[in-house]
Amino acid sequence: MEQQPNNPLHGITLEKILTDLEAHYGWEYMGHTIKIRCFTDKPSVKSSLKFLRKTPWARQKVEYMYLKMLKNKKRSS
Image (cartoon, rainbow, N blue to C red; front, side, top):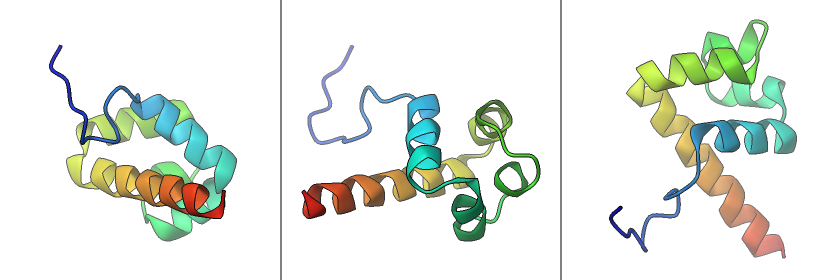
């Protein structure tokens, strides 16, 4: 496997990203910030994974939200 030292998402699964975001922000905030139905209508990790794996633009937004969350956590530590 190729090393990616400058990629902060390297080795982090989409499921972990969703789980961490949901624990930190909750589905309501996530659905308000990223307007996708899998966050607003009966949200679950399973339905979100299914949608995000097929929808690159939505996945990018979720990954960006995750990176911002990490940056804010790091800054407040």
